[in-house]
Image (tube, rainbow, N blue to C red):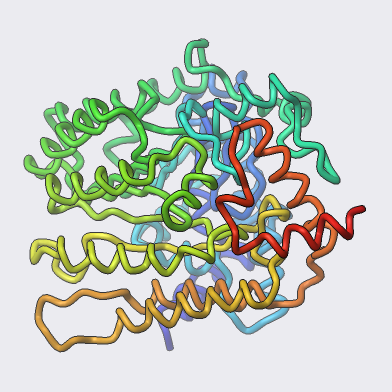
Length: 461
């Protein structure tokens, strides 16, 4: 019997819908007052009246407590339908089992199942975004996560596709339009009222954005961890950054991270950054990126912080296939150059390839088969680098890194009702408008897609 079988059995003794993540994990979007536990349920609004009385309501909302009540009473909360679909239609374990089995969840099972559903609970795995302030306007991003996107949409409006892409009206109607960093934010205030208590119980803390290094509260967290007399040494600390901020901020970040690491104030420090392909094509996708400076900053951090792991998150999209093999080559070069025995089994740098689902007009599914086949070639290259060289100091691509690229190919060629023609038309409309607004040139940047682009335009006429 596997660990997952045992965990599922223990969860089911409590209730058929029991999932520890509803207590132990949270993502808090403080820039617009939304929260959810686990990434599957849709984020819900945190009532200001609740955090006024109880700062922990950033996680322990009455809405979430009612879902916990259902779990403790052998019911399945409707917002967790992703897991119920997996369990009812396959023999696979759902994410409620995987998340409950995590080291930040499973040890707390006995404690949690004995709680009253009304009880507040300090989560062990916390992701937080303090602000949507960002210096990039990535093609697949949105005003919710980028202040630069907000500025563009306020000036030009949404993109005129088959729907009004990135318009602000829906965010306004649903109360999700982000606070500006210069404005008073009651959600951030509540976070700091809760933080000293929350910090001591944390297993994992990850700061996202926006661009966290442009958010003043990120620096406040780093200073707290660097200076507190009672550090939480079991903490795994992670920060997302585009590594495209001014050099003085990179230097200051490295300085603070070095103090935290050298004084053993955390268990692990991981930096998450992003890149979707190579060179000017990467710059087109991540508008605001200086690709060469990005690589320089990656190397600078690997040199200065030998105990830090950098994870390159690649949101693989329709513009990624043509230079991805070069990105794989570079990651392998850095794996070999900066491998350090202090990391034990971990690579200095990892590539985490995930496929883009939204917006659909940038999905790899819109591409022709010849373009999708380039993904398979990238997977073969990563597999080549994963092949053991039978030396003690060799660290190539892990099986997980390889399989995520292979999974991407399977996704690209799968037939799941994706509206190819509609999204191809939206793609052409999008890049045309993108070029007008940003002064870019799609066809010069992606000559590999010239025939593809022209065929769609001709059909449109």
